[in-house]
Image (tube, rainbow, N blue to C red; front, side):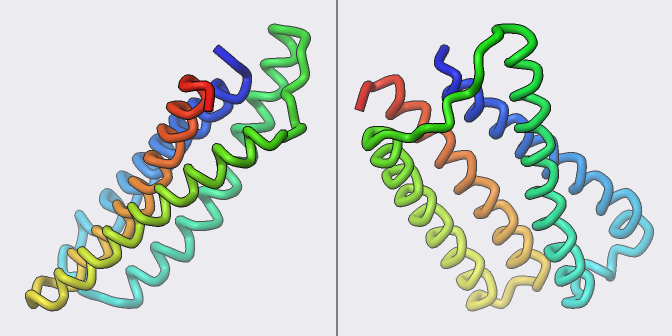
Amino acid sequence: MDNKEKAILISTVSSVLVLGCYSLYVYNFYIAENWSIVNDFKFWGKAFLILIPLTIVAQIVIIIIFSILNKIITSEDLHTIADERDKLIELKAIRISHWTFIFGFLLALGSQAFEMQVWVMFVILILSGFTSSLVSDFAKIYYYRKGF
């Protein structure tokens, strides 16, 4: 397995762990105690504003740890140089990711058009962002394996 594929898999696993742990934390400490909080815009705003930097910091820390462990185990540096193929794969993955998120965003708006509860919209938004990240990672792995 190529180092880039390893980094993508590490990113995917860390995304799943961060969102899973944060979701459990929010549920156990806020939602389980007071179910009516899920209809509060202030709660969702705080939840989003905490999730975004937490995910970014966790991704950076995990990639640094992965780089250090990779250097210790294989005595190889991660390739930081991106050639045209890497850039093309990144652009294709971003395009697929954006379309996935747009679909989720439209679903979230549709939930409000059909007069569903507010929390449904926010859950769909979080899941569409998470799904678009996973789809992007899987598209990169697919294109790297395909030899595009």
